[in-house]
Length: 253
Image 1 (cartoon, rainbow, N blue to C red):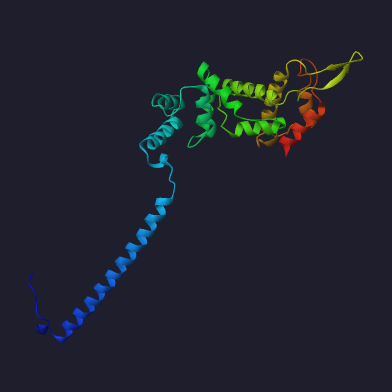
Image 2 (image 1 turned 30 degrees about the vertical axis):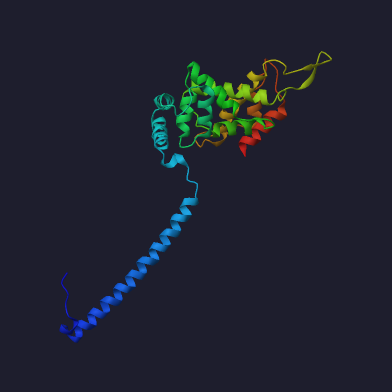
């Protein structure tokens, strides 16, 4: 390595050299400070529990699978099952859809609405994950519809509402039961076909929501009109007026 004699430098060059040495010393101190800060940050990161799914190959695989599901629910779910990302059982698929992490609600709705044995079982299990106990019908239906987006096909909507009605009645036995008089004797007016009554009321709620909140409807449906529309829906019998009034007010407000 070649050396030079500082005695050969001019006063100006000596001044510049002194400045550079001081600058170098300051830079070295800055570097050491940065290294110390990095060591502290690394120590903190080591104590943080980062989910394996974020960085593991399987996690990246799942992220890609979710994107595929959002594009094509049927093929996306087949891919997940094939690669053991979701167990091949209606209960496991239903739980995965219920959690909904990274899934579009419209894709979940499309999958639940498919009319094949496996999807129908998934729909049943999915509905069973909801607890509608002690909820009024409007609240329960809103909770159910919040977990996915209704597909546009009427047949899919029909299957979903029918499944919901069975679950709601199972969670709330007797909610549509009312003791009244018939021929001087006390009878249970809603002993039979309570699920059918619930099913009809669910569609009534959906239609009423459109009638009251759709700007294209020039003449909103009145309470009396709503009650008249659903006269005799329980095998020719009327459901309690109070029930229909509560439904109407819940949707109106």
